[in-house]
Amino acid sequence: MQLKHSVMIGFMGQQFDRFHEYQSAHSLSERLEMASRVRGGDGIEPVYPQDFRPNIPESVDIIRQAGMPVSAVNVNVKGDAIFRRGSFTSPDPAVRRQAVDYVKTGMDLAAELGTDMVTCCPLIDGHNYSFEADYVAQWRWLEEGIAEAARHRSDVRVSLEYKPNESRNYVVLGDMGRSLYLCERIGLPHVGVTMDVGHALVAKETPAEMLALAGQANRLLYVHFNDNGREWDWDMLPSSVNLWDTIEMLFYMERLNWDGWLAYDIVTRDGDPVETMEVGIEAVKIGQELLDRFGCDRMQALIDEGVPAKTLQHMLRSLLWADTRNQRT
Image (cartoon, rainbow, N blue to C red):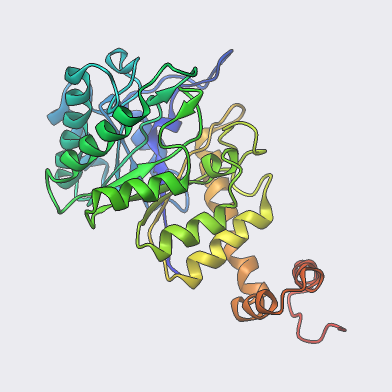
């Protein structure tokens, strides 16, 4: 399994939470230079429109000159003030039109930068209170908007990222089930799902199960890798909290022969963002090494046997001994 690892260049610059700022602000060129120093990185993920302002052609040239493959263009339909009351599901048709146009522009930029994918997380679309939103209209607008954007061109895939909450208390596209439902409703083969591991955890999903579900539906296009404690989207280092979940996801990627891009969505509150990204990528690669040590065939046999104690024993012993063939049973 040859996974490709992408650095989200937004995380090379200034970062925020509700109370503090972290890291210094950097220009696009500076953030690209930092990304180029991330050992193990195979590409980058820029964000439209933020990384392309104030001059789109100039920004495209800067990204090209950096010489790194672009895994996807991330289309942000939540950050600009116009989207405060929603993007694809805004009650204002002019705002809905703007959201669709953002995705179309992102698709054109993706093609120009040599990638075949945009990823988009419409998490400003949802509601906060009962009787605040027209759920029927919201779903119709979301389906119509994504479908129109995706039909703009068939050579660029549209990958939809879900999240249960933030910025809305309840996001329309809040879990894998609704994301796959939307993909089937749209019915276009180049529309699929970005599974953000942290978002799946906050949604109280089992990430490997959701990955398998999307993979079997041929809708798993992209993965954002990070971790958290299942309560809030902290964008922590992969496997720092949920080691077994990380390895289980890698197991199902191997089983499904999935060899797409992993993009790293990690906040650096302390330390160097370059080093943080390096450790994030290394954590996943070590997870692959551990999976090799466990043995995919052996793990599948243990799954088939269905005795969790034996599975845990095998994994724990494998952590201690590289060769488990001669362990006592």
